[in-house]
Image 1 (cartoon, rainbow, N blue to C red):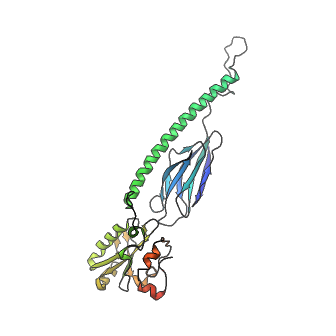
Image 2 (cartoon, helix red, strand yellow):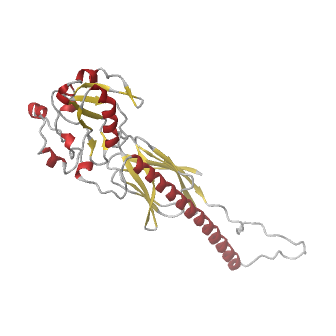
Image 3 (spheres, helix red, strand yellow):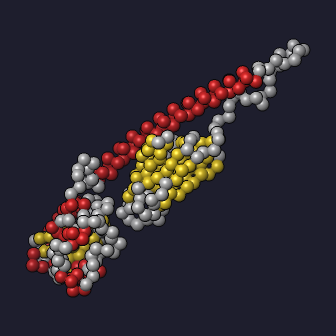
Length: 309
């Protein structure tokens, strides 16, 4: 048994062909160095059939273990990441030795005569039949394992989709799939509060409700804006909050260093933050410029810096 490993970069696939009488067992898949919010699906293509192996997420599931992922023929590994890579590891081993090989010593009956052996054609047929039987059993076991794995992955996907508020049947609208496609995207001003440090793996709507409840004691909240990455709708990890006429800002700033959901918050005036003028490491989508044409940020005009990069 030998160690086996492979790295599949973003936008590429990897074809693997086991040697003769060899099996490749993939035991684990893991993300390479990647930033938070990276999310991708893993696939293996066998006999022109594309099978879903699992889901990797830098925030929740950076690696996956496989118990019975065996391949005895050529297969192709791929994933949906647009940057970074996925590392597959496992081992390679020979198939089980056949029970009746030609090198086996023939049995003597002590008759004083020459030992009788089956003809070469008969031995070849027997060997071929046993090989086919063993291969058939191994293939059945592998298909059963793949089916069980597919069911487990399907269940995991449903859990992830439910947790991330991404229903399979729900069509994405411009408002819920673009960072700036919501009413709250406009309105940053000198009285705006900046909040950072909360858990950002939850859906945008849940984070907005949590922030409203947490800062509701400071005054009347008129706006909560939670920027997201358009590609995967994962929040960027910070938010902007407006209190009516800025009344209650002092109370809000006193919450700096307090905890929400077990996470320590950083609360400052938004105009003191770089995020007020532009989002770093933000990719956006083709709709961002359209929405930005209708959004007026006084701070952006003053400093001539672009939110969309």
